[in-house]
Length: 128
Image (spheres, rainbow, N blue to C red):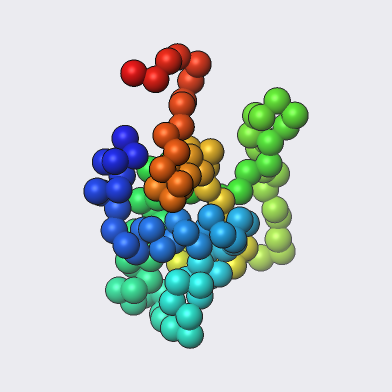
């Protein structure tokens, strides 16, 4: 599976993965600024659309996710919705600076495989 991911993902994907790996808990704005220093773009730009697509690909591929709290047994804890005075008329920006991102455990194993050449064992069964 990791070999397929190496073939499937672009250099832009790997730049995002690398930034999140080195900056656990970073926001999309921080990722953008880390990968594209000094470049500010509009939310309706092709660059913003491409950036959204990169985050989407990596999220649906289970490599990165928004940070989630867990309980002592490792179960994800539901967030309590924040109630603010008046709702915003604006959609969430491609460069949101509130939600934090992290690698999933599978994403961390993928990084170790690509960087260190370590083949992880998933599950209790023998490696075939």
